[in-house]
Image (cartoon, rainbow, N blue to C red; front, side):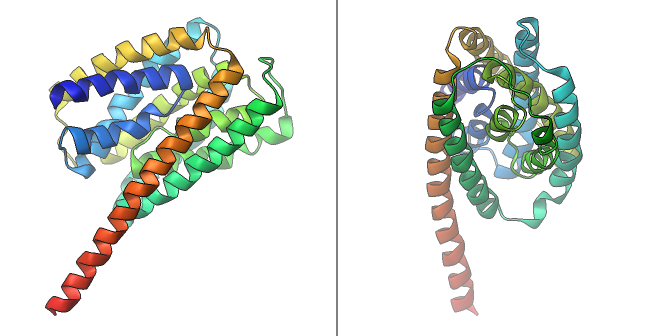
Length: 265
């Protein structure tokens, strides 16, 4: 299974480089279901993997002129605060509840992104100053999700930057990667001292994912923005549906456990 796990590491990197997100939603399931790590450890492990891989992708996008540093500082700064708080408070909610909410948000973001892709495929930035104010609440939500669930939040960052910030899709992807790196660093800080990270494996996983993100970043320069938006929307719907289905089984298991405990008493 270790070979499969490393193959999926490349897929995670490819997704991050091409779409500016999505790969982070795969990381925890890969660690838990493919590689057999404990969920709590998997969440903590996912943050340096997604964060460092995203930083590498952001650097490649920055060289191509596809990173808005000012927007990243505004969005990422706010998100880092709630990411740290979310990591410290993550024990208050069950994983099933967190993932169910995450899946619903992913599908909603996919609908918005798909509709936006149909309205316009223009690559020119569309500035909306009033809408930029809405980025702060979204950033706080993204950071909270990062800290609690262990994902970078690209599935929300990219639509927010496109729909609220008026940023072209390619620049939204590059900016999203920098924000994800900031998010993950802050979220991981909230887990320090709680889990023992197997750094040798994590660094190997990051190295493989880095190859994928470099390939994805290169492809992102060649794929039309409309195609990127629609691909991102389809990805979100698929992932959201799978997570929701998996979460349904988790809720059933929780109910069965509670019933068994009641019968025992």
